Image 1 (cartoon, rainbow, N blue to C red):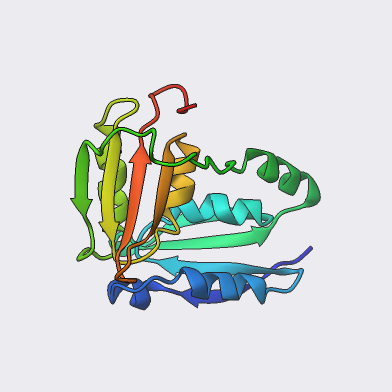
Image 2 (cartoon, rainbow, N blue to C red):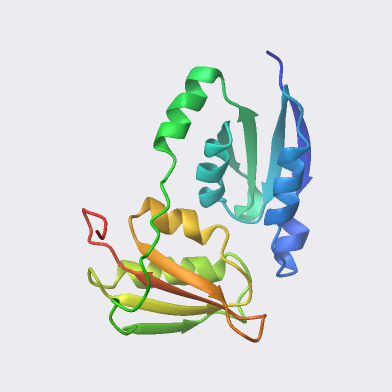
Length: 181
């Protein structure tokens, strides 16, 4: 099967502080059966790899000059898709925050451009102990962060605050070797 690629350059959106996730999903949903997506981004979109894998795509990432990335998402063959689906993270839905301890750390990431909020949150939870809770404020829903938290076994709960513009996420840190039960 010969794959033709549809180009999507989200670098200008990311440089302007925007969130290209919706545009990426629109492009993916418009692909034909023998089409893939060539994505150009200002960072390596690792969480997108897992999400696209669950949709039946493999990826090949190449770093370009200046730290930018080209990622080719290709439709997986049936045996590849079965393996990708089995490896896709299962959502870890917290059973409410009433049993969680108060947050040990607070981050306000509302003024940061992507991917800095995700980078800061992941760095912070790496330094925290099993069971501790991080609270973070964001200016948008963290579409790329959630799969990364799930992959690492952390629990999370989040949603928009009453102001409608601030997204608050709580993350309960899993241990280094086993997920939080």
